[in-house]
Image (cartoon, rainbow over all chains, first blue to last red; front, top):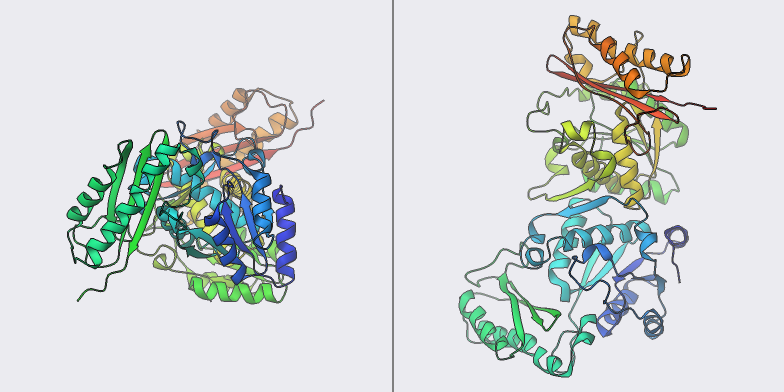
Length: 283
Length: 283
C-alpha cells in the first residue's frame, strides 16, 4: 500500500517507464460492490490498476458527515484482493493537504444546480482532490460510478477545460437486490429506514415506465409521480427531483431527447441520492 | 508552429516516447531579451524546448490592456530562430477557451496582496492558463522570469498544492543598459516616460545599498527612500512599494532575513513592475 505522494510518483514513473497505462479508481473507501465493479472494469482496460482510498475533507460541508463517514481500510484491502489486488494509494489528510494548502479548482455550469445548490462547496472539493489524484498518480484513465452523476459531469468538464490528459470512463450504478443503489452511506440506515429507502429506485423505475411505455413527455407530470411515490415513505424528506439534459444539466420541461432523472432525499440524518438515465428514441 | 491542443499532445507524446524531457517557456509573445534568456536557459536543460505564445484574455481585467497588448508573432518567430528555433505553440483564444469554458484555478495566500489587490482576477487567470499549458504540453520543466515575482510564487504554490508534475525554474530579470527591467509593455512608453521609468530600478538599487551597505533594517525607512526616489519622476504614480518575505509575501517591518522588494507604478496609462531580491546574511 502506498501512503505518500512521493512513493506514488515513483510507482507511477515505474509503470510508465515499462509502457504501462495507469487505470485509477478514486474512492473514499468503505468499499461495496459498486466500487468493486469499477475495479473489475478497470482490470479490463489495464493490468496496472490503482485504487485510491481517501476520505476527502474539503468536499464535506461544515455540518456534513466527514467525521462519521465510514472508514474500514482493513476490510477494503480484503475486498480488493477479491478483484485482482490492485495497487492501493491511501494517504492521510496531512499528506494530501499539507499545512498552508490554499488552492482550489472551481467548475461552473454543471456544478451549480442540484447537489451544488445544497452543498455549495462540495464540487470545488471534488474537483480539487480528483485533479490532485490524477496529477499525483499520473493516471491515464479513470473510472467513476454513474451513481454520482453530477460529479461525473463536473469531473468531465474539469478534464476538458483544463486539458487534463486523463480519459474518463463511467460505470453503471450497482444496486441491492431490491433496487437500492449501493452507497457507503447505506450502512447508516436503521432497519425501518432501509426498508423505506427503496422508494427512491422504485420511483425511478415508475418514471422510466411512464416515459418509455406510456409515452409521457411532460417533465412536471413525471416529477409529480416520483414525488408521490417517494412520499409513501413517511420519513423520507425530498431535497430535489430533477429531470435534466444529461450533458448540460439544464432542467427539461419536455422530455424529447435523452434525459437524466436525479433524486436526493434525506431519511433521518442520512442523505441518499439516485439517478436514472433515460435514452429516448423519439419519432 | 503548433496551433491546436490536439497537435500539441501528439508532439508531446512523440517527445516523451523518445525519452525526451519537455522544457516549456510560457510567454504572451512580444518577445524581448528577457524571454530569450529564458529560452537560452531552457536549452541548457533539454534539447526539446517549447515556447508558448498566447495573450491570455482571462488574466486581464476588464479595464486593462488585453486588446492593446502588443502582438508581433512574425517578429517573435524570427527572434526565436536566434536562440535555437524552439518548437512554438501559438493557439488562438477559441482553441484555449472553447465555447462554454467554465473552470478556474484559484490560489489563495501569495496571490492576495500587491498585484492581487490591484488586479483581483489576474492570478486566477494566470494559474488557470499556466495549468492548461502544463497539462496540454506535458511539460516536465518550465521557465519563468523573476520580473513577475508574485506570479512565480502563485505558480509554485499551484504546482505544490495540486501535485502538478512540473519543475519550476526562475530566471533573473534582464534589464536595459540603464537598468529598466525589460517588459513587453515598455514599448507603450513615450520618450519622456521612458526616461522617467528608470527611477524604478534606480530606487531598488538605492534600497539594496541601504540594506546591504548601510545596514538599515527598518522596512519603512527603506520604503520611504524608494518612494522619494520614484517621486522625482513627475509622471510616475506609485501603486505599491512592498518589502516582504520572498516565500510567504507577508510584509516585513524589520529586514532580518531574505526579503523581496516589489514595486508597481503607472506612468500615463502604462503600468510597470520591478523587484529585487535581497539576500541578507545577518549576524
